[in-house]
Image (cartoon, rainbow, N blue to C red; front, side):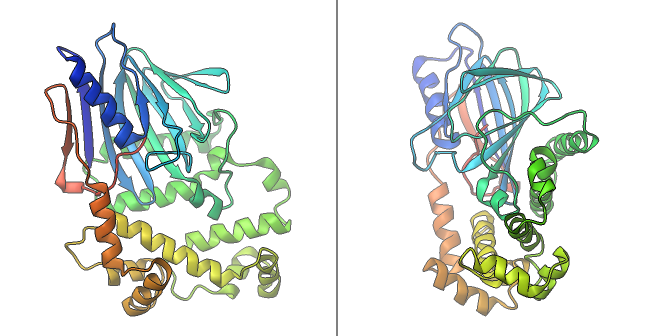
Length: 342
C-alpha cells in the first residue's frame, strides 16, 4: 500500500510546488489546488492483480492527465471512477458531466479531460490496462465519458462490490486483491458491454474476441489447449484455428503470449526477497519453473528474477517530504509499483 497526503493549511509556495510535482510524477496528473480554498487530499493505492485500486479524498482540486507520451502517460489505460460521497465534475471533448455520490463514469485518458472537485469528495478509481480488455473482447477505447446504466441490477452489484473492496482493502491479503482485480476484469463487460457484439456473437471477429476472454480466464490451467477452448465456445477446434490463422497466429501461440505477459505483470508486483519462479509459473499455467524461466528469458531477454529486480528498482524513485506533503509506504502490503492515476 502507498499513500500520499496533502493539506494547504499553512503551506508555502515551495511545499505546494512539491505536491504538484508529486502528483505528476507518481500519478501522471497535473494538479491545480484552488489557491483561494483550503485544499486537501489523501490518496491510497493498492495493486489488484493487473489493476490499480485507488481510494482518494479530495477537496478544491483540479486534475488533468499528462498528455506527453512517457513513463507517466496514462493513455494505455481506462479509468473507472466511482463517487462514494461529494461530487465530481468531469469535462472531456467540450462536454461536462457532474457525477454525484453513487455514480460511476469511465474515462479514456488518451483524450485529455479535466476533473474538478469542490467540497470534500471521496472517489474510488480502478486503472484498467487496455491490453487486458482487448484480450477479453471488451471495448477498450472511448470517445467521451461513459456512464454505466445504474438502473441495471448487474451494474449496481458491481458498484457495491467495488465499494466494499475499497473499504476493506487495507486489511485484505495481496492474493485476495489480485483475485478481486481479475474478477473485475472478467465482469467489466457488464459496465461497457457493446450490444452490437452481443447481436453478432457468432461472427468470426466476435468469436476470436470471445476466445481471448476464455484464454485469459483459464490461463492458469497447464492443460489448456485448442480443444478445450473450442469446447467452451461450442465450435470445432479446426474452425477456431482457422479464425486465429486469419489474424496471423494460432490459438496456442496466443496462449503462450498471455502466459508470459501475465507472468511479467506478477513479477512487477512480487517481492524479490522470496522465491518467485515456481509460484508464478504455476499460476500462469506453466508445467514447471524451468520451462517458465527458459521461455521468459527468450521473450524478455532476462531471467524472471532479474526482471522483478529491475522493475522494483525502477519504481523506487524519490518522494516529496515536508510538513504539507508526504508519502507513506506501508510495508504490510507494499507492491513496489508506482501510484496510479486518481
